Length: 144
Image 1 (tube, rainbow, N blue to C red):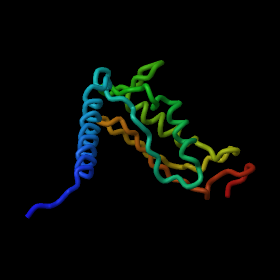
Image 2: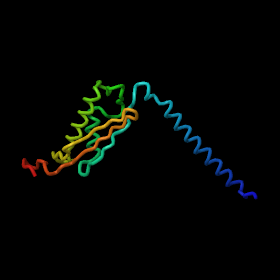
Image 3: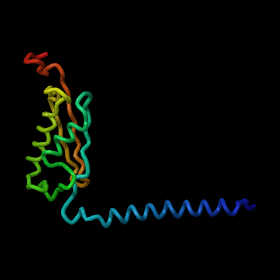
Image 4: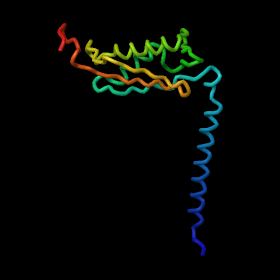
């Protein structure tokens, strides 16, 4: 029993298959030919979890200021930025402190009381888990 398929439908299906296959091949080839492995593992992003009030971009900006930004890379146990080389344990501690210093925009309130910073050295993704505690925030010189 033969399935009847019109010629234009068959051509459209073949073109879709070719486009999908060539797209996959191009993405694999671009990953394989990337120059990130020559220098080390590039910092590919910052993931922020646990924040409710402090904006994610504020935390990301503070962490980028300590060296975890585009253009920086990991080589062994060293974070290499455009300006300096920092041991990884010191860089992670700097990122933790920078996340804790993030404020609510337009104020000087720093509700982040704890931060956990983890780096995946194989992908270059930095994960920051923050804990906001508003019971100890200083407002106008008084503790609430």
